[in-house]
Image (cartoon, rainbow, N blue to C red):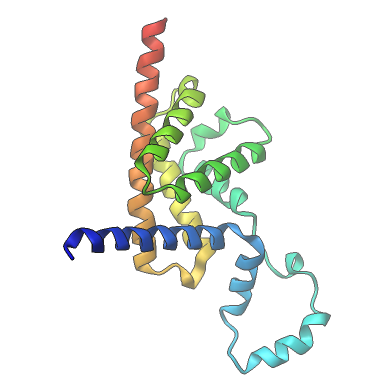
Length: 188
């Protein structure tokens, strides 16, 4: 009956909010529908249903990029020097980042799994000479992209949760990265 049970429930709800908002932000079809429906009134829905067969494809009606395109644009804007460390076709890397982030979001309250993922990241990136600013830019780009993709559904409280979780994750990634760099430099 103590406070511990309420904290556990809060963490479960927070994890579910992160998971659902992540899925919404990453799902291009849902994202396009949210943007299109956000300004529609209930009375417009019948008109919209009648006109929908005459409308051009969703891609032509909206100017939305895939999540990974938007994220990489944000990241390169915040950390322009990092772009030279990516292959010319950075889409594959962006998709790998999304897969990695999906795993982190699913396990955001599982310290053991987050630790394993951050160690794996550190081992695969230790040769890139990353700085703290790159991790901060990564986190900021992620939150900005999520905010843009969620639109009006990205409430202040939800974005505060994202900021808190992303900050903790990027701190852990940075710490694991530094440990791996020190470990690999001792080997040499």
